[in-house]
Length: 440
Ligand SMILES: NC(=O)c1ccc[n+]([C@@H]2O[C@H](COP(=O)([O-])OP(=O)(O)OC[C@H]3O[C@@H](n4cnc5c(N)ncnc54)[C@H](O)[C@@H]3O)[C@@H](O)[C@H]2O)c1
Ligand SMILES: O=c1ccn([C@@H]2O[C@H](COP(=O)(O)OP(=O)(O)O[C@H]3O[C@H](CO)[C@@H](O)[C@H](O)[C@H]3O)[C@@H](O)[C@H]2O)c(=O)[nH]1
Image: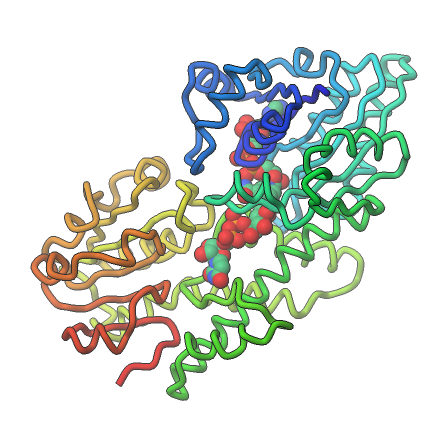
């Protein structure tokens, strides 16, 4: 089987590479020639654990190719995956112009039956727009070539992307013809053999499933953040509450971590886009509007704790920041809570010295030298008034506390991801501020 994957970002590169790993011949296409050149030279445009090895192996085995030419990618392809970005427009709706540009180009090029699969996260009804766009391009050429559209939303998490793709909880596929279903079954053959649930459904339901999943997960996080803030007021401990409710199998243990807010390229934009879809259809999604409000507020929770400890005027204060990426395991900083905190600290006159195991270059690209960058986690602490933990990288969880004590001016930690135990921190003489944690 042969496919093209258009858009070689987090989703396109991971999906294309993992499908190549199952034996499919994959050509990844991107308009960004720097990215394609880098991949053809054996480099990696993104940090994603385990991905580089798979890319190299499948390229060497002749199953994975990179090009800027969609025409080349579509040659003899059974299916083309659209995996380009769908960033939020000014009004919160998903900007579909990248997706529809690819659809038009596909219509301008194809000469034989193909399934056009939308992997990008797109609002309900978008596949029909894709279909209409391809039809219009074919009509313009006077060509009558059969094709089908399919929706195959992606559920991978950055930082765990390879594992999520290869061993998914399920694969969701929306189709409207047996022919397209058959192509998708062949494509996911290795997953079917592996007993992965492949959930075929209609296209509109598949599109909605993606937004409903992300919105449900975002809702759990905002719910826990709201509860955490109340825990602080009433003297309860959100980590105990998390265990208490997570042990109920109807609730489950995952995605209940309170913290300094959710970020990333998906939850913020997808919650916004679903709210917008609701509004467009005269159905206000009140719950999701609250989820978004709670999250915006939560991104400032550490700043509020810092100013209530040090006062609103932070001129002359230095802060060590551990973590810049929106979550561990990635260099992605889209909608990262660290960016909100940095802006607020700088505005209040503070100096920030940050360390992140992989996201420093990305941070420099975004905000340049407005903050200082440390070479390692301990170097960030030198002369700082306090340590702020924003991202829960594994190495931050078991630091050498003697190094922290030597470097910090005061033994003060603001822990935005609840990675330390407040009682033990207090025993060791730290002033510790977690999120929704009980302190004596
Ligand atoms: N990042 C994630 O974890 C994740 C997970 C699931 C779903 N998604 C969804 O998948 C989609 C892609 O997300 P991403 O994070 O991979 O985006 P990304 O920005 O990392 O990558 C998109 C790529 O598409 C390329 N592109 C744009 N227009 C093109 C065109 N006409 N032809 C060829 N290439 C083109 C860009 O150059 C870029 O390399 C989005 O809809 C997103 O919501 C993302
Ligand atoms: O209990 C939790 C879990 C996550 N987060 C935060 O939520 C954000 C998103 O984390 P995560 O979901 O792990 O990463 P993403 O890569 O954004 O993945 C989400 O978004 C993707 C894009 O749509 C989906 O494919 C995934 O299924 C979905 O988990 C991050 O800022 C996390 O710090 C919390 O605050 N508490």
